[in-house]
Image 1: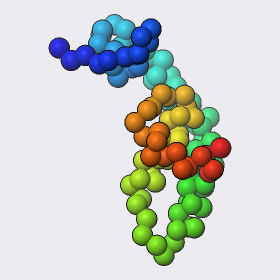
Image 2 (image 1 turned 90 degrees about the horizontal axis):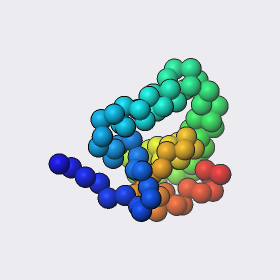
Image 3 (image 1 turned 180 degrees about the vertical axis):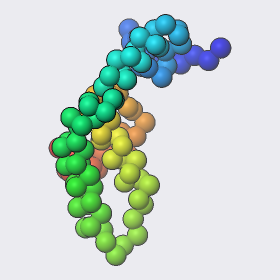
Image 4 (image 1 turned 30 degrees about the vertical axis):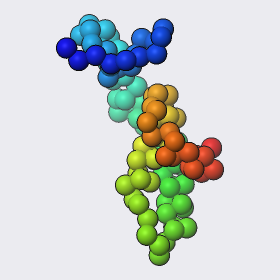
Length: 101
C-alpha cells in the first residue's frame, strides 16, 4: 500500500487521499472548481499572469532563457492563486514575487 506523510492534524490533499470515498467526495469539489464556467471566471486573472510572463520573457530577449523553468513557475503561480497548496516549487520560483503580486 502506498502512503504519504502529512503534517500533524492535516487531512492531506486530493492526491494523497487513499480512501476511495473520501477521494471521490473531494474530487467532486475539485471538479466544480475546474469546470468550463468556473474556468471562464479565472480568465482575467490568468490573462494578467500570462501577460506578466510575456513581459518577463521580453526583458530577457536575446539571452538564453530556461522556458521550462518559467512555465513551471507560471503553473505554480496560477495554482497558488487558485488556492492549491504546492510546496516543492516555492523556493525556485521565489524570485517571481515582483511580477506575481
